[in-house]
Length: 344
Image (tube, rainbow, N blue to C red):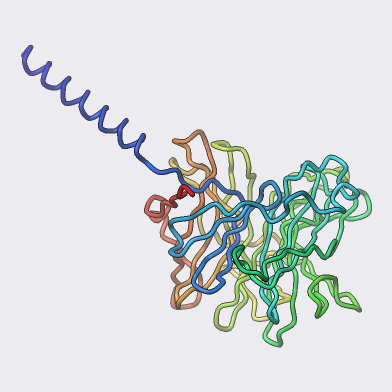
């Protein structure tokens, strides 16, 4: 019995040392918030919330190299919108149109709709190209407390079937808005056309300057066959293991909506079909984008890993579709996809 106990202890200690060694040898993952992506040539570029907008590059969607930041400093107008701005730019989105990349981004005071969406442009995403130069085009739209019951952050641009650009955006307050962009892609079209495309209940007597309990944000519209699919995040982000983020979806044959969930409920009336939610290993997940690369559709988002003190990690998961055209993501792929942050 004594020999058996010693042997069991030895096996246990050996397993423990092997596990510790595996952890020590593991390469770091990409720690990221609010990821969006584009491909230029054979390279994927990933942009995220961070100082000056953080970006990475990859040739396989798994192994990523840190590229640096888009803004060496900060947008010249940022502090005129949010006096407490500290260089941390939120929730970018990237679109390509007529030979130019448009990188939209958010400047805001946390928990307030003291916010604006700006845009910077470039001819290429390759930092090694002689044509690489981001040129800021300034503010696209701005929200002001007590004037607007919406929050000008979390932009996303989609083109309709006629090639007209539309921007969706929003966080908490009165929900997700959609407006037509001008052909130059840097300002609203005139005459202006706006729609409310998704929202959750907001009690009437809450101060208009406060976010309130309507926990909805980060719209992303993805065109697939005959439908525009509106993904949004419900719940709270940025709380590590206490995050309640999850992804829901609705769809419409008109970019302006209404976006209905699988039960037929309008997302502007609280509807939304669950796509993916957290589990014991991933406390919350959301602020997704969606893309088609080489015939495959992908959902890209961040998730908070419970085992790593709730640290946010990049996830790139393949989407499948039901026979009647609804997106599905295998929850097991939360474990199967592991990004690798390569050293320079």
